[in-house]
Image (cartoon, rainbow, N blue to C red; front, side):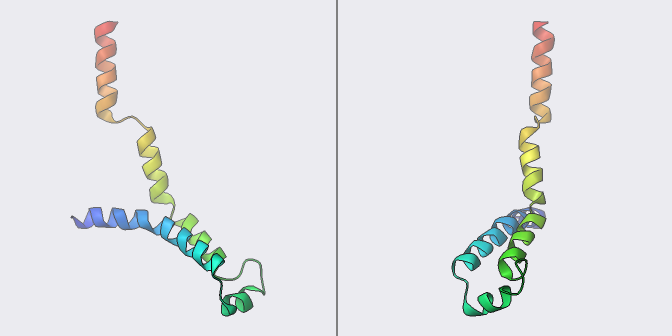
Length: 86
């Protein structure tokens, strides 16, 4: 596996990883989390993990955009078939 491919996979793993950590922290919040997070609704680890998940959503958005746009090969095939039928 090339280093570039490994970096791409690591980038895709970040957002769901942080979302999972937020879920697990919210479900099993310990006493320290309860004490430290009680001072502010935006304090604590759950909001931090959720914000990190949002900040790392870029690779997923690019992947979704790439899957929606037609590939150059498919676009060329469609334009070739239009020329033969028209």
